[in-house]
Image (cartoon, rainbow, N blue to C red; front, side, top):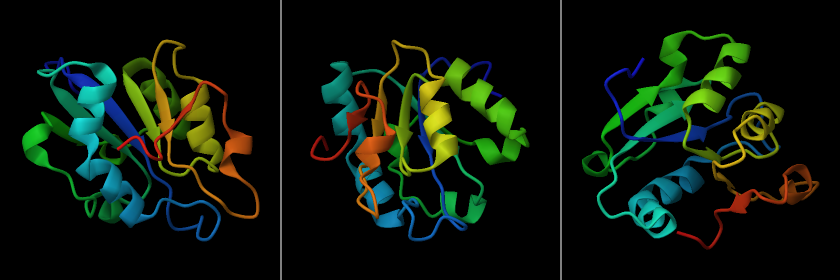
Length: 150
């Protein structure tokens, strides 16, 4: 998929559609994250000249394409849905290729397993949610809330 792309891979998991009202990805939240992504990553990684590629995971390509991304700051954007992988292949793909994982729907079990299967040395960020339960109850202690970090 990206044999010649040596940039830092930022993976973003989205969940919309069948997940309404239960911790789904909200376009306003993900757009806020994307607006401040470059500054956030520079501060987090402490690298000024790193190149980044964005890998967008989700089942709604139309939704993924509405995400506002400052393309001047991103080397390449990949819509993983276009690779036609099975869910198991996506889980493996993420664990093998993501340098950073961002969950925009932390109450999604698929997002949980994607993050859980990431290698220990790779940071996992999430957008916290408050629904009938706090999304913090569903995450591991070493995962980092993106709230207030952008």
